Image 1 (cartoon, rainbow, N blue to C red):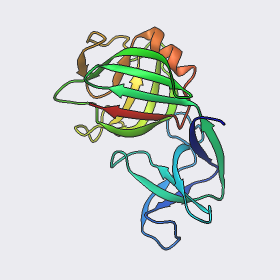
Image 2: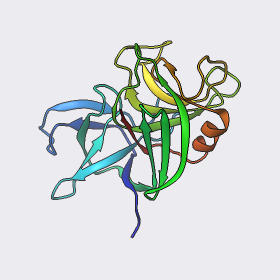
Image 3: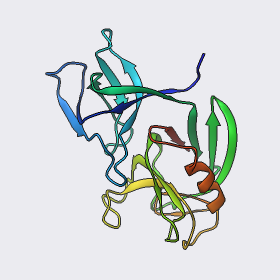
Image 4: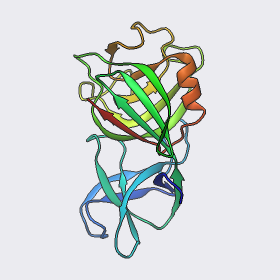
Amino acid sequence: MRVGQPLVAIERGHVARTRPHRRARRIEYVAARRPLTGVRTVLPVLGRNAGRSWVRVRLPGRPNSHAGWIRAAHTLRRLTPWRLLLDLSGRRVTVLYGGRVERRLRAVVGAPSTPTPIGRYFVEEGVALGRVPGGPFALATSARSNVFQEFQGGPGQIALHGTAGLAGAVGSAASHGCVRLAAGDITWLARRIGPGVPLVVRR
């Protein structure tokens, strides 16, 4: 038996609704591609309706950790064995594969005034940053800051990224809400973690 998180990749844009019915209240429109890299949108599956014509999925953006129903048509089923768990008090990211711990990575988490939001999220897309602050890689997640409605022109999106050019030692609480990892750790992670991989942030 395969162990992992069911996912769906959407082949075209979908309207997410509050219930599995075409007349249910609209929550939001989910684009088929992610804005930074253009990769296909992949969403964690939380359930299906009795006829399996609708699928309940975790949604990106605000409000944090929200979910909705989309039509199963024009989606592709996938499965990921990967899962990420961020322990804010321990300032550590635990990486699981098939339910087993692969690595535990020390991290910089949000400062008390700009905390990393707790909740259930997922990785939206991976970005190669190179030699810029926060490089060399970033994993942009579905989480959004509870302090910043926007940040440096973006939507206040929370990411796991590197420490290049940024103050704050690994193991501290010093970021604007993002999760910073040592260069070797974020590189290892970025080479394995793709869109849709679930991320749980807890105290």
